[in-house]
Length: 390
Ligand code: FAD
Ligand code: UDP
Image (tube, rainbow, N blue to C red; front, side, top):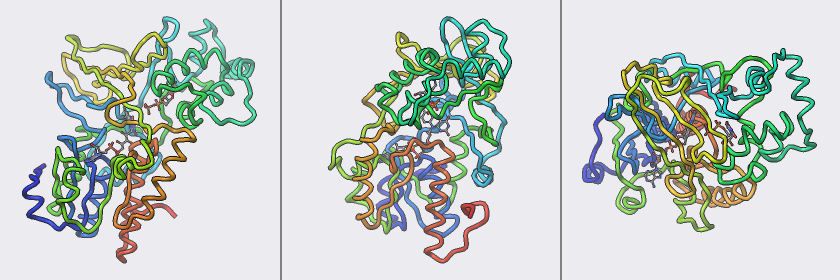
């Protein structure tokens, strides 16, 4: 996919849209506005690549890895699969995760197998339900990430699987985090050990980056990389701006910084074919400094005599990866949102632009919904695939 230089961008302007951020949010919108409405787009990113956090590439050993940690595509929305299928073929992949607990590698989400191994039992589904019911500590109103888990499985399993992991991942106790965070991981009494139960669990056959390349292969899209919006803000001319970076950064942190959680990735290649039995192994124990290890070949289906893995070390400073769901942050975001609403010509989009802990499919849905709104305002009929249901 050809990219342009700043000089070319300056000569080519004014653009109809400047889109900041070449991740899912910015790339889907760029594709739609150009292919659907004939708009001229300049898409910029401060990184030297497209794809945002979903970027994948061949490492020095030739193994396909995700630079920013494991990205597993899952959705219940047929229309989002249909839309992305214009740019990629798929391989089926059901994600399974093991957690290192008490010297065992146990399936997480907690399920019948987890309980039977951990407690050396041979319970059936009904017995497991009764077992969990006897341990659960009912919480009248569930507010926090601690409440969710304690209410389902009780304190012991909470401490083994959730407390340490969450404290490391977020730098906060689960009691300080919104319930939506740990509620992402269900509890089951069946033997279903899949991490997700979505109708579609698939990976782009040739990787995310190739899918993005095809999405952005339109003559009306110019892509300018390694360029921070702040350095070209005064130079570029465009009619509308769509900003997929952190909303607080756009406004110069005028109300204070919105907290984001960051990660440090340690990538390694090992001189054997397989490192661990599944793509992701979680390490909830507080004494282990990382949260999880990913072995990419399980995700991509690649065969290779070597294997590449990454460790995730959560940290406060660094690239903003996760908005932190808790009430005070939601309040601060609302103030930025109100400011955004009073700023004509700029729309905020994506996980950083709208401060939402969104999965990839949700960001695609958000970008398609924005496109639909813009198309309607322009009086253009939206294709079936792209239209939101209802
Ligand atoms: P991003 O991908 O973050 O893209 C934003 C882009 O904007 C970035 O490339 C950034 O460089 C650029 N940018 C920001 N500010 C500026 C600026 N001032 N100037 C220029 N460019 C700028 N989702 C799933 O569905 N399944 C998963 O398994 C999954 N795993 C994940 C694992 C990790 C470790 C992380 C961090 C996220 C995971 N996600 C997963 C979430 C997924 O990454 C996001 O939903 C998706 O990438 C968000 O797309 P986006 O375009 O909103 O943001
Ligand atoms: N979590 C946990 N232990 C685990 C897995 C998840 O405590 O073994 C908690 C943790 O707070 C984590 C959240 O559940 O941040 C959501 O997990 P998920 O795997 O969805 O996180 P992501 O892939 O978005 O980093």
